[in-house]
Image (cartoon, rainbow, N blue to C red; front, side, top):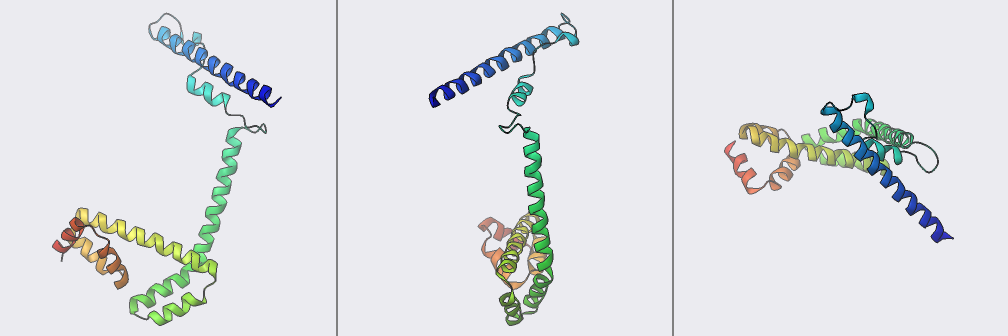
Length: 182
């Protein structure tokens, strides 16, 4: 019985594919005839292959259209983005205070704040720091392509630990260019 179901499914897919091919060929040949003036644009038959494939597979098994499913996924992504934004927004005052303390060299006070965070706050803080590090690394690469002096100025504006991290991760070529800017 299950074999019959799969056989019917395969036959249906094969028939759909054949119809798409036939209508696609008809559509394309009619477009050629229309361009040569043999038929008018209203006489073009068949269906564009991409449109046919989209139409064939746009229905989900539950009867919802694919667009509704995409909309649902988009809503979920938006909700997740909103939650991430709210989490980041709530941790930013602590983040800024920690960065200020580190910039001043007061690591014990910064560590005290870190230790007081919940697991979720700490996870969010780490994600923010990771994004900042990535942005800093990309900025240095951009500055190096424009001006070695600007790259040096940018690196010097960062906390010492971040300066060390960026410099240690430079390629030999990047470091040589960076040294030119000193």
